[in-house]
Length: 275
Ligand SMILES: [Zn+2]
Ligand SMILES: [Zn+2]
Image (cartoon, rainbow, N blue to C red; front, top):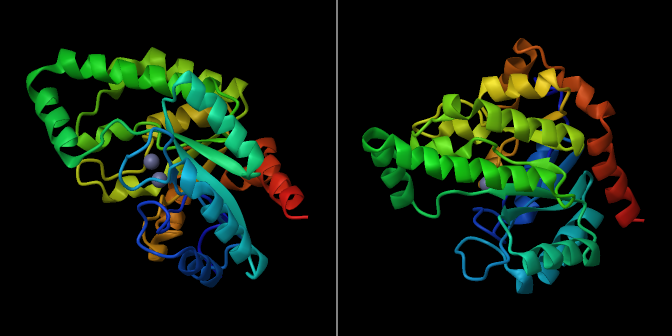
């Protein structure tokens, strides 16, 4: 019996991208935690050569493996991917084609503003010395997130304010931009994840996104799911209980997610793809 209600975990990384474990180990852990569904969502990057990501050529093997493991597991193993956005125009088309060709159950859309530790350190330094520079960069970030929100390709919006892992938290400067993004997410019927990995980011110490953004989702009745963004199989449901309490305290109803259409669509598609 677990101390949280959500019986699925959809944002998990394996050896196929930058995770530390095999898919089987993630599934075993999820089973042990009493989940009914676990999703594998390795990084898919269509601009080749980014370390720790899968490229187009790796997909076939990945898909085959996830489906094989699903077939022999007690719990349902969903086929997902965390897709690096922005994409160029041809990459958008390719991404849509790949999703259809390989029958992915869902795509998580992510803007990753830092490609290295040095990038993060530089951003914090700029935050302390040249705020205008950081504001410009972060304005660009929110524009990219808006593009992602508009796209039909993604069911789940990942770690909305992930730029703050550098310690440069500019949220108060972007209240209208964030509202615009949330309105778009609502109109496009997408899910926002509350990502517990933020607890372990030295300069964050809270889930991603912030309580304020989570409240904005609750106000708009945007479905929220909890993700651990695990890179180690031990972390498949890390801090789910704490996070559920936090969302409830903000007035959100975690249980309501089971009745929400975008989530049902993912599970229905999974069933259809595995008939
Ligand atoms: Zn990510
Ligand atoms: Zn991730």
